[in-house]
Image 1 (cartoon, rainbow, N blue to C red):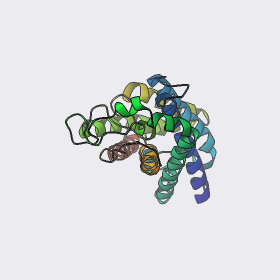
Image 2 (image 1 turned 180 degrees about the horizontal axis):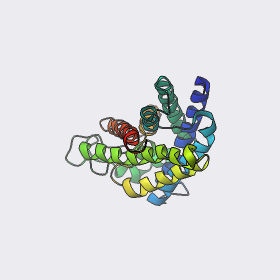
Image 3 (image 1 turned 90 degrees about the vertical axis):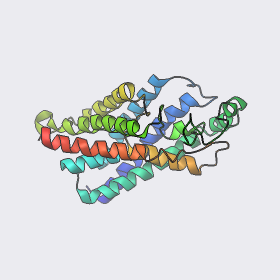
Length: 263
């Protein structure tokens, strides 16, 4: 696999992942969207279909990691060269940012209508910068389209939740290699992975919104910070480390656990 294969596959694949995943969040969140208030099931299945589409698209080019936690787990397991890891991660971050911009372009009119709506603005915290009784930035009214946030802000719990969910994801991906005499699941693997993501969202996504992918959160959060969105509020950078550190630890644990228990 050449460097250009990794760059093209991971950039385009991750862009599609975030376009469709962030797109379902926008569809459910924004006023004047036909899917407004469709709910958690729509979001979890939307993200699952996003993974399915992106994995099929990039699988034959770059093996469709689409996630630094997956790349790290595969490097520890031995299926990915450590020299390729920086290129994978950089391509994934770039793709995530491109996907987030495309979500904004697709829903540009809805973003404007939502962020200038008096009801939406009135619902924002009276003192921006405070959540509950803790000195934590209040998430802007559309930040949830771009990135994740906890229902209860407890950094230890939030990190542990992301670790657990990511271990499930990465271990499910790694153990596909045990099927069919070590040949894996082929194209069926993308479907299995997508269903695992849906399962994680339904079962483990409630506390933090299940980032389980550092660039899925970081790339769009950067885009949220720089886009010219009126009344967009804070990008909540004080929380941004959680969906980076948690999934990376989870990916590393999954890679090590695979080597100990399955090899």
